[in-house]
Image 1 (spheres, rainbow, N blue to C red):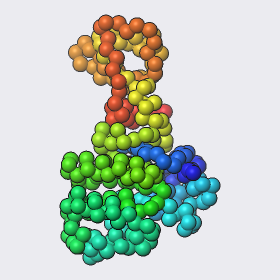
Image 2 (image 1 turned 135 degrees about the horizontal axis):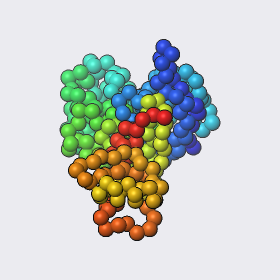
Image 3 (image 1 turned 135 degrees about the vertical axis):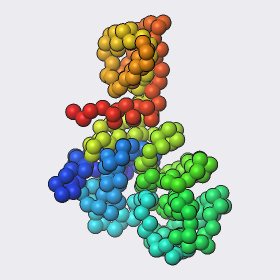
Length: 286
């Protein structure tokens, strides 16, 4: 079971926003969709979820077209900043409408989340704070029976405690009812431990897709005297993502395997996902 994007492109007034995106989203994984502001993440998610249409390319779910296919679309759910329900509706009515549309709403999980977050389901949506509107939408996203859940900036307005609680609920529902989650967020450091695979978009192009384990193994930061670091990098034929210099010391962010003995004056450390992303997306586009 997979959701397959083939050569997806999108342009507005002849200006390219997405360029030939190929991505196979496999069932039962938690993905991170990463990119800087304006990279095309939300546009891509809107296309997948039939809220926008590609200029070119095809989108298939288990080999069947997604667009104009009610059976396929009912297996997808997207939570975003958009408010799809009238502000005058009470939270509990939003839950009921979601259940009527998608069916098999996980009421036990909803009640548990409502209690944990302290959400008043008798309140009108428009009377909720930004954070609590986000919480209401997150509960609906985690409680629908869909196979693919897309979360676009899912922690908008949440404080640190509520963000941590949300991450715990994601893991809990993923373990009890495995599905595919695609999380698009700028809080990379916070979600890094949740993600199994990462897709990075820069200027409308998919520039990297790898498991988090692969990225952790290949990404390194090398620190030491400038001349020695540069010689060490050349010797190991490492790909430089970026560098910064302070005094006579040089930090270089690289991809590749370090072979042989590391000189005592040089330190080789792991490159965390957020730093890897920053350095990769800071590179000039070829």
